[in-house]
Amino acid sequence: MVKTGHTKSPKKCLEDKMKDCTGGTWIITRATVDEVDLVSIGYKYNKKKVSTFVMIKGAGSTRPGEPYIARFPDSFGNVCIRHIARPVVISHFFNASNKVDSHNQSRKFSFRLEKK
Image 1 (cartoon, rainbow, N blue to C red):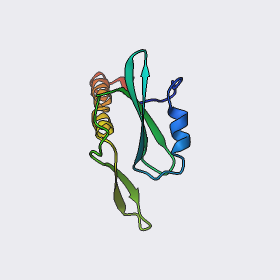
Image 2 (cartoon, one colour):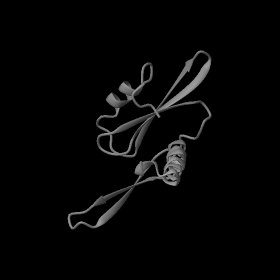
Image 3 (tube, rainbow, N blue to C red):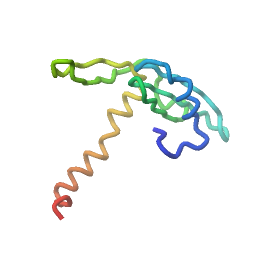
Image 4 (tube, rainbow, N blue to C red):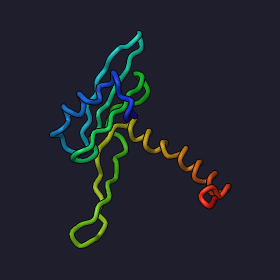
């Protein structure tokens, strides 16, 4: 996932192209750099935010995958959900990305680092 270190990535271009797109939209770009085939995906999961991902070709499928489940309150305070389409490779990324955080949280708890 491209965050702040985005030099030479298509992050700005993807954000510009997707500014009027709806949530659940993605754009795929391809490039070859130093004989390595790269794929980048601009993914918009809400009205404002575009996430950018860069990977080597073949890292995962860009076909529709497991949707993102957005939770939000309605006018009565009830929690509503909306399924937002996303590619398989991004579904896999988000399903696996919290593993390090979960491990660190359990390790910190066992050491009681927050208490010291």
